[in-house]
Length: 135
Image (cartoon, rainbow, N blue to C red; front, side, top):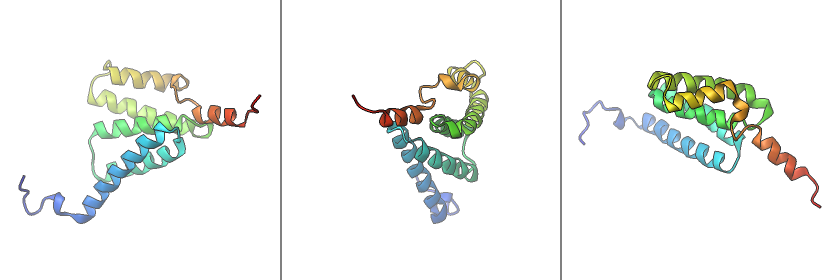
């Protein structure tokens, strides 16, 4: 591919932002996999801000809002933020597809009943089991 002279791919500052976005996306996935909702949430919030500055597609924003929901729903003190993220993820999935698409329906279920998500208060349950005495 040969880009025109003014192509953004020559902009080093923009390339650095894109690289940061890639790294944040990786951190989110790894953090969620090991159950670290705090690290995933911090990375997701930063990535959402970057996506806004890059004027990213609703598809990317929908996925990261869902990831942020999955991270925030792990702790009681961030459940309110989780509800904000899942509302946005649902709205974006409706925009991308249709209100009855599988993704939109899944987001709607978690929007309406966030406690049904497998990560609901997961960090607190794990912390409680870590503190429980062993027989």
